[in-house]
Image (cartoon, rainbow, N blue to C red; front, side, top):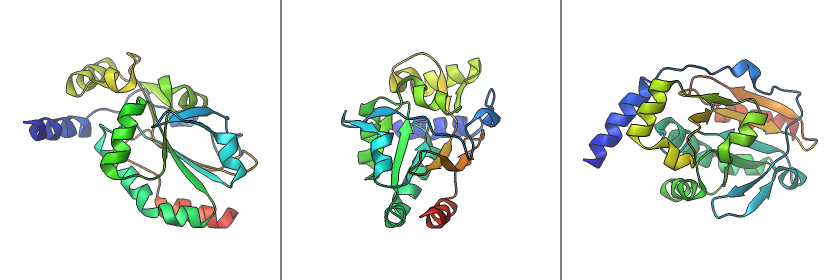
Length: 198
């Protein structure tokens, strides 16, 4: 029965409309990356400024462990993580999910990179990535899997899928943002860019 509900939700997700998302407002190449301090899946604080001291940083946002597209993308990043590290870069994923859920995602998919909880999408808002679900989609997500429980609020907001490379000066040198949640950054493209700026 649980498998059926998961499949049913995946179908509903696949046909969910894309409303209220405007990728043109997101930060772009050349913009200064907003600094942040967020907690990881174990509650430890992680600062972007500290990560940048060690090299370039790849940031990616995902909607949640409930999203099959997000899970596939995270697994793809895990596969190329050694190549990212070989370029002296750090990879970090951000999600509006509460730490318990991000920890579950890490364990389920054996992810070894940091997943940070962007509570109430505060950092995503500063990067221009947040949108509010239309009423029908919000109801469907709440009934389908309980979005408010995952995010710890009733804001019905999510980040657009996005990936940024930030150099050690804190400047965005690569940006992928797409209002279509089925589209994600190309991992090979990201690694190519890391090699160029190394």
